[in-house]
Amino acid sequence: MVDDDGRGPGRPRRRREVGPRDPDPDPGPVDGSTSWLRESAGLVRLAGRVLARHWLPLLAIAAASLLARELLARLAVAAGGVGPVPGFLVLALVPLASLAALVAMLLVVRSRDARRSHVWGVVAAAGSVLVPFLVVYESRGALRADLIDYVRGTLYEQLGSEAPVTVLPQIASWLVLGIVAAALVVRALGARLIDRGHLQGRSDARAGLVHVVTGYAEAVWVTLGAWVLAGFLGSLHGWWSAREVAASVAQRWDSVREQLPTLGAFGDWVVGALPVLSDAVVTGVLVPISMLTIAVIVYGLQVADTVTPDDVVRAVRRGRWAALTGRIADAPLKLAWVRLSDTSGRFGALAGGISLVLRSSFAPVLTYCVLFTLLAQLDVVVWWVARLALGWREELTWQALHAPLDGIAEMLTLVLTAVVTAAFADRLLTRFGAAGQLRDRGARSPAAAR
View 1 (cartoon, one colour):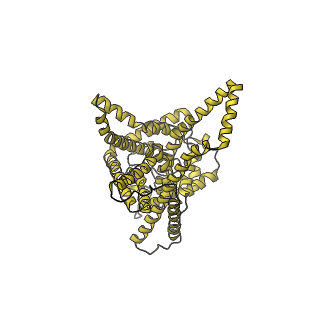
View 2 (cartoon, rainbow, N blue to C red):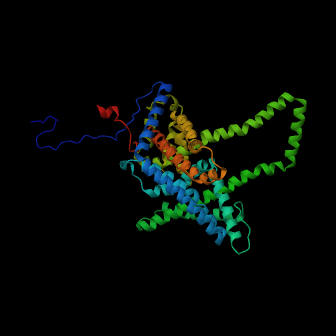
């Protein structure tokens, strides 16, 4: 006697193996332009649904990050009064407040089923996440502003006290280079303890302390190194202008202008257009790709161990962008996926994240770059609305409103860019065979509907 489901009497009911549900499966190759627009529009709608569901905690995280940045900046000034070393060590924490807020937002919108890896994996990959974040952070001038505020605050503290004014802290000094070297040593020792399994059998508190110290050392040398690099690049123009070879080149170019006016005019146009073009590439491509890489690293750490490199290759080959991804060999895709979960290496996760973004041939990334660039200009909209609502006001009124309006614009920009980035990064990873991680994935897939 056999039941309706095919099992005999007394035999337990067989459970059907069901793989992870993909709410947005790849239907296979379709028309490129139509698919690009349709998928981009779907991701924008997904970002809107995620924002409608999680706007309150996201705004709370953004507000907390602004408060934390202000408190850390004041703490850095107070520590700088004790000595330059404590001041710089605390100053390195100021950008981490915004980074922690961004990572927290990306994690908040995930589903509970997607929380597979330990939080220390993200902490161990602090350097890999911090490098692209500093690109985004400096794109709005925040990195330089933090350093200027620290130097100005330290000077005001010295002027306000009875103690004599000492030498102002210099970011490009042997002292800062020594701090960077010491942080590198601490980071290397911590990574060695973690890699060789010396923390196995230890208490969670001790293991967590080692991870935190290692991540903090990584953040110190990366952040201070970024300030040193920015100062060096900023001084290149003055250094080059003072060289004799620069004066000789300028004289020769003046003679070219006189003898060949057309060529001279074209050369001047090219020289004037290069800074504009480079700024456009940085603002419209480099900064959005850096932001997307952060989300790919954070989300990729959660799913890298659930998908094998061979599964990644198969998922990409049968995707809707197979005509583009067919130009990429299997080995780079496998290596990028393996590196994504490498938190012990110096920048393994960063190399893996960038490789996945660049080698994904994910056409909606272009749409993401446009959206991110537009959302980054949200401060202009906030000020326009404020001027429209308040009308004409004296200059003192706008000076008083400057900090609150800038804070509102920064919070809104962080929330909107984080939501859009989460939607596009999650979709990019699903193209490599990973399960979706966002809580609100919209309507059911056709397979589920059937």
